[in-house]
Structure formats: C-alpha cells, structure tokens
Length: 351
Ligand SMILES: [Zn+2]
View 1: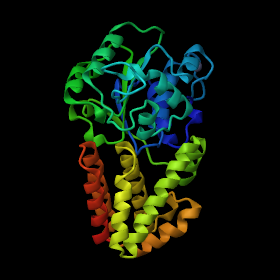
View 2 (view 1 turned 60 degrees about the vertical axis):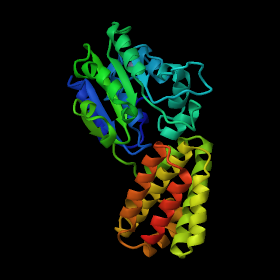
View 3 (view 1 turned 120 degrees about the vertical axis):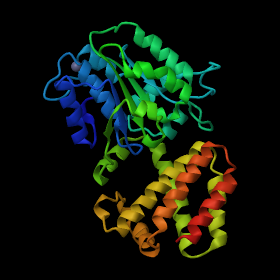
View 4 (view 1 turned 180 degrees about the vertical axis):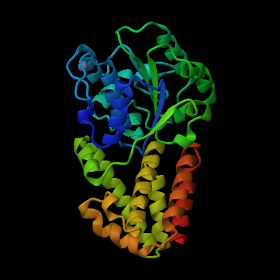
C-alpha cells in the first residue's frame, strides 16, 4: 500500500513520512480511530515506506522487492497479530493469528478498511469473541528474536490490542519497552480507553481522524457488495426503531428490540450497535447545525432531518451511553433479548 492510495488523513500520512525521513521512528506507536477510517492502511503504507529501497516524493516506490512483498502482505519481517478464536477454518486447538494468516491476507489485501465484523466473518468465527491470547506473545517474541530476513525494519502490526488480556500484555511488555534494533510495534485500536495502561503508556499515540462525507463514499465504493446489503438491513432496522419511538408506539418499539435480539450472532448485534451509534452521531451533528460533516447519504437526508427535529436535546448522549453499555454487555454473554428490550425501552423514554 502506498500513501498515494490512502483515502483521507493526509496530515497523518505527512506526519508518518516526516517521522521516517527524520529517523525519529517510534518503536511503539498506537493509532486510534473510529472503525473503518484507514488506520491499518496508514500502518501498512508507513511500514512499506520504511522498508522501500527506492522511496521518493514522500512515498514508497511500489516496485522494489520489499514493496511487492508488502502489497501481498508476505514481507518476511512484517508480522500481524489480531483477535482469534477456535473455528471451522482451522484445526488448531489453540489457534493464533498464524492459524488464520491466509484469510487475514486475503481480507486486508482486498480491503484494508475492513471492520472487526468483516474480520470475524473472514476467519469464520462470527458467533464468537476474538481474543489475543498469551500464545501470540510467545510467538512474536520468538520471531523478533531472530535476525531480520531483509535489510530493513521488523514490524509487528497489532490489530485491536484491546482484545489482549493482562497475561499477554505482561509477556509483551519488555519487548515493547526495549525492542530489538530496527523493530517497531504498531497497535491499531478502536477503543483506546480499553487498551491496557501498561501498553498504552509506552506508545506514541496517533489519532486517525474520521473521514469526510466524500472520503467515506470513496471507501464504501471500494468495498465488497455484501457490505452494502448489511448497511441496507441495518438502516431499515434503525429507521423502524426510530419511527416507532417518535410515533410513541411502545409495542412496535419493543418488537424492534426483539428483531435486534434475533440477529444471527453476537458480532452482528455488535455491528448493529456500531451502526446505530453512527446514526445517533449523525442526528447529533444535525442538531448542532453541522450538516456538512455529518456524512449523510443524499437519500437519507430527509429521514435524519426529520428525526433530528423531533428528538430532545439530551436524547443523543443518553442513547450513545446506552448503546455503548449494550455493546459491552453483549461481550459478556448477557441475554440479548433482555439487553435489546432494555435498550429500546430506554431510548423510548428519553426521546
Ligand atoms: Zn519500494
């Protein structure tokens, strides 16, 4: 991935290039973003730039052997860690990222803007929580203790460190603190507040900014069609819910809650919560007269404008808090019927 191919976040790209050019390469970096804003794409472009044998004009060449290996995500010195669990796509009893590397590469090469739900689907663990277990720390420590295959940086791209437990973090800590020479860790998180403090405090943090309306549309146009199907499904569910709430129909509102609880997996339910959170953000932006950065598709303008006009001032912040709570509780295996019934009821009374 070249910086030139990245959508949005030109300032972050510039900062990364300048860090590389000046030799101030942080050995541990934490990039945080709202899901889908391109942190992984930026991390890949940065590592490709650092290891390119012929960089010019602030970008990698895209043609040298290192760049070609990076394009397929098969560079021998670049490692990936991401949350996994047991599933039908591996026979490993205690799977690690390595068990699913093939699927990770396919997904990230085709679409570096993928979501956590896309990753779960790609590795076949839709109904489970992905975790980063201590075996990952052991593997990576072994790999990094070997000398680099090529003459450049060794890099570990660590996707969603918030899925790592204390034991894994403890194992990794020393390596993150004092990595071997020419080695860097890049952590990519969607929830910086959930990253263990011991890791967070050792990283230089970089905020990857939300995309503008046009940039989001470009990212969406690159994404596979089934994303669009899910988007349409979620939009229908969200508008049914909001219409029932606004028309003060409690029975219909509770029925919407049941439909959400019946979504086929916990990951799907969490993906809906993320989607609903984004919709609430759009409503809030409209209420604040910030339409230009609300990222609303033209065919949805009427719906969002009508909802924004009919919700009270405190509705959005209360709804966000409640949606975040539900997302956290889904992870804890709380009964989804109870969770969604409670959520829609709280939204109903706080409009
Ligand atoms: Zn190159």
